[in-house]
Amino acid sequence: MSRWPGGSQSGLREANTAKIVDAVKRFGGLTQVELAEATRLSTATVSAIVKELSQTGLVETHPTSRSGRRAQLVTIARRAGLVAAVQIGSRSMRVRLSDVGQDVLADRSMPLPADHAEDTVLDRITLLLIDMLTMIAADAEDLVGVCIAVPAPIDPESGLIAYRGVMRRWEDQPVAEVVQQRLGCPVLVEKDANLAALAEATLGTARDVEDSLFVHASYTTSAGIVLGSRLYRGGSGTAGEIGHVQVDPSGSICTCGQRGCLETLVGAEAITAPLRATYGQVTFRDVIAQAASGDPGCARVIADAATLLGRVVAGVCQSVAPEVITVGGELVDAGPIFLLPFASAVREHAPQSRAARRDPVPTSFGKDAVLVGATIHILQATDPSQLLEDRT
Ligand SMILES: [Zn+2]
Image (cartoon, rainbow, N blue to C red):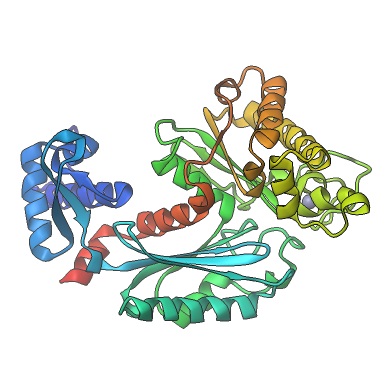
């Protein structure tokens, strides 16, 4: 090691302790040998610090036979705190409660009306969360933090939705502040695609590369960009907003106020509208399920959307050159009907892209990608020394 933070023995010890706590939080649980590899510290240093952390109650060790050898698995102690991940979608919301070792303790969903309003949804989140905490004999004081995922970009300065029109009834309140006041713990609000991108880059398919892209193909269309192993939001927080790239200058008006955005051609309304004349009142999920089971009309609509989305994603590949593309959201449930034309369009329009040559892959976390990312986001934002202080 070339530099010793703090320049003193105790400063070094603190820095090494933080490294070990960070690594355990990042991976959920590691053996001491794995911890030494992850932190580049000696096994003797790791062993001494783990012993000290066990005595303070921050970490626990459990016998494991990972990789066929008996060892001690180091995890953050369950009682060190709880993390709530909340995903707000266009038609539903989901709340997941985990401990700081990322073990899921409770997971509940609730439908939401179309065009829901911020105040009523935040009431429901608070009530549901308190109910879930009660079920596991905990309360709001046990929360290390809450991360709320929304289907819209957030302006980092104001904390408000960065695009007017895309979540009309959520625009005037800083969501993080409101929930923070109610629960009394740190609250982060982040675009859903960014969190899924973080999940892939930390624990998923993109964990071994520095630059990756997550495409969220759901009721709305968006992407999360990770550059140099960090989430890239851009100054306005709107990086990755591929749903609002214009693809048809004479197209219909988008929720954002522009004409012919990608989302007006591949979002839920664009997928269902052309089928209504022959299929009646079909839902977005109906179309995806019928496409997956071979219905030619539904498959056509999905494949056309996949091709258009692939072209726009190819443009992102040309400009930021990710090494891996992962895809999540309801459209992925259509399977090869969606994935093949999507991959083919990315390859055709970004032939030099390494990510396109590897082919986009469905998210490693299925329907949990955003919640996994929300949990990681809170844990990465929490100062490990704060956790230590909380225990003493
Ligand atoms: Zn738009």
